[in-house]
Image (cartoon, rainbow, N blue to C red):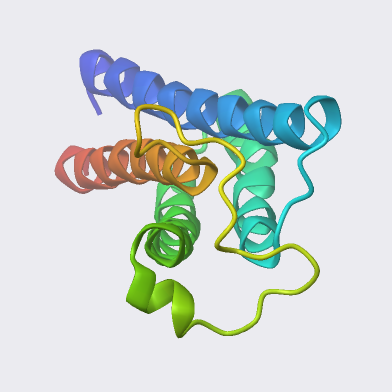
Length: 145
């Protein structure tokens, strides 16, 4: 593997880690500082995002680029949950026909910046960045062999 390719993969890995770290800090800010109680779907998204911070951080330290496959899977699942959660919030038919979400309704919007940016949308952005970076790493690893 060339030095340029290796450096590009390291940068992509850092981007994925930074997205997971910023997403984690954002969710902790909303729940611990703003005192927004997460709904059940928010918890599922957290369950998939928080380990990515640790996994990708260790991968950066160990220069383990094979982790891209696993981070791609976790971020794809998390992104799918985010899309569903966003649909529950923004599409009346989906919200009305979704399963009950527990004490805090999943249809609730603690934030609604610019009329479309909600917490699940922010999580979707994080998962998308991680997925795209992981996919780039995975593709480059295949080419570099």
